[in-house]
Image 1 (cartoon, rainbow, N blue to C red):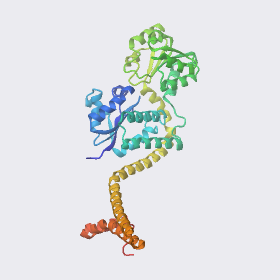
Image 2: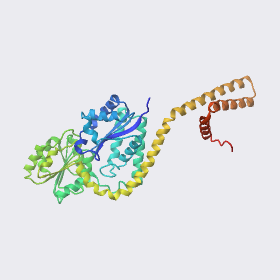
Image 3: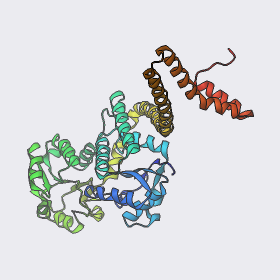
Image 4: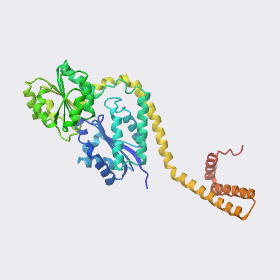
Length: 420
């Protein structure tokens, strides 16, 4: 049977626009079923899926990555050529390095951002619970988390990080000179919304409101920022009250459609409105951007804002890449050593059989009353002869170059120095 190799494949903000990324995103609640489907439907032995705002990646132990790539298109009912131009595939060494870089924040839209590590840990937990995380991939995730921790604790990669949340505030400040005079509506109650709310709260806006499908979660989050809460189905009637709207939910379809926003703009008498869509798939219909009085920003727009802070962290990047290269070599050495395990086990089993055989023989001689010193001498000689029989016999039967190669190998194994 062909041994499995590690592969990583997917699309991200470097290779694909938002309109493509959202088509291959996975809803969190569907991930366990998707993983099971992948392992059952294709010759993939181990698998984990990382699906975030900026990337969808499959980490697999398989004989060939083609099966996983085909599955990704099939699962999302897309023609293969719809995503293949944007798809990257990394073989084993590159896959390990890629995962280390992603977890360390080196491949993020915001260099050094910490959220991705938590997202990767969640991807590993989901795969483990789904039963698709085996020895190889499980060990890789363990090493990945250790490397990310080392990079963050020994380099300045995360120092003075410009976050997506801070970028949202920055963009809003371009339109409104003073955010303290504005009312801000947050749609959703997840981690990203909480981060954004914290950044906006620092600007002391006139009002903060959290809207969520579950009112209790919205109220709990609003309480942290001295804000108020509403149900998601109330947004349409109250949208016109807000100057800044930040949305990030896991809804598969847009929450804010063109018609709803048009009505809000009209009710506002065309006062400007900033809308920030941090969701994937998008929460706000793309056509909203065509409205004159609405400034709609997506994940890709925020990515352009944060790029300006990258140059100052290049020294930390070089240092981090050095750590990662060393740890990649170490992990690949572990994989190579793992492939020798069956041979090592067979060698030890063979030696153990020889030991037991000689020991049983010695027990019989002692029970018969033989001299213990003579028995011990016979035991040591018998064991030595048995253990050396195979290499000695192989060397005696070999000829020419084969004998020379075998002699060198035996000398290396036993640390021999013939001729000295």
